[in-house]
Length: 194
Image (cartoon, rainbow, N blue to C red; front, side):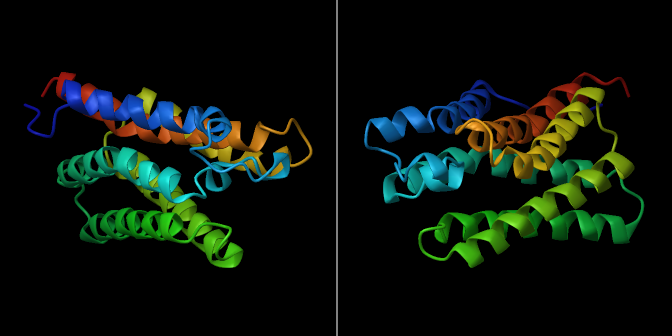
């Protein structure tokens, strides 16, 4: 019997708010809430480069991050290897710490540090996802969402000369899939037979 965390209506609302927030950043920029640093800077990082927009990104990220931590505590119990369990903890917390540093260090303050935090949180997500898929029972929907994140991430460098919103849209696709992975796994895990 599943004894892990369950999705509540409040968790679903928080998940949808996170997704809605990143997808509405251009509109929020037009309203003066998010940053309008110009068409060459259309990315989530650039849009949230104001105190209010960064604060809101932190607020809408809290529940998805806490859900992921909570679910991973449950999911790690099924992993036999203590080394893999340790790596799952390290990669998860590397992601969380680098995500916080990403929020604290926008590209307008220190582009090199911002890039380091973004690349490190991305790499830690990819390693964590690979370990999860390899060692934890993961649904086909969860695997598909992980693949969406990977493909969107790999396409970002190719988006430089495309439509001015391509970079941002690929980030939004990746963030949407990333935010949905844990809720999907929680629902699927709760429905699995023993």
